[in-house]
Length: 407
Ligand code: CTP
Image (cartoon, rainbow, N blue to C red; front, side):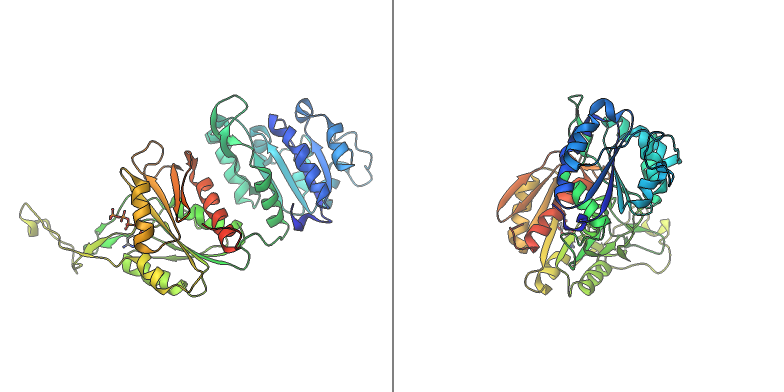
């Protein structure tokens, strides 16, 4: 499965979610890949899965009772964390996330995480409402701030039969995150990706701008996903209220002209350019030096606008062969048809089409219902968190750059 786990000591913390059963196969795959896997179960995890099942696939008896550890010469409750090259808690319940966020130490998974010297990863799995609750989100944010890798849950059918976000990340996503945490190269290692995000703001005078409702969430999610895949990422960002993902180089711009210059400056050496920014098609013909006074209009004020350069076209014209160029098409109506035209017209490799009038896909939302449109056809996706759309997009870019397929 993954190269970086070979010979590594990995503690797999399994907590009380129905998804615990999935970890038996994951533990087997880790073991087959050459890892030494020590499974640690919480008491409630043992209600869902038999410890013996883990022993059968890893060859090592799982631990769950911190007062029953054989090797207590070195304080058994922390020994496993100290010795581990990485600790992966999957599935992580809301209860475990809360414990870890607040440093509780009343079970073996919690003490192992507290004592860990190497990277710690958590893969939450729970019902959508619990996942989206303010408490859980705050706990997850706290863990992420502390450097714990949060492997976000996926959308899909949950144990309750409901459809929503909260399903344990796929084995591939768990493996990729573990691989990266252990210093593995990731599918985009050695690649450079340029991402644009957010709105542009075109000044009318020193205090007013023409802008749009883009939140930047999509572009930031793409930058983060590309970074997670091992790429060196340059994020060209318009004014947004989002934190730049750690490890991503950010160039801040305001106008479309600045955005074009920043993208073209970053283009040499880029393997992929993802244009998620909502670029103003027009800018004011002139920017007033002083604040425009109300009286100037006399009840009506006309603005003269001039067209901005099309950055995508400029990128396609200037790219070296092999650089992938991805555009976004937000449309009110037939987004796929518009995306197909844009793909051909601008010579792009892929267009992410998004009908901004469909429920859940509005500007500023955390979810999108998109279609990936390329020369190979169009693939509609269900309503997904933007992070997941970003991961799918980065996955396609990785496959295309590795020559294993097309966008
Ligand atoms: N884009 C660009 N340069 C511009 C405007 C947009 O590179 N001056 C990029 C955006 O980053 C996005 C895509 O082009 O990737 C959007 O395409 P476009 O056809 O301009 O979409 P709209 O602006 O939505 O089109 P229209 O206004 O014609 O509906």
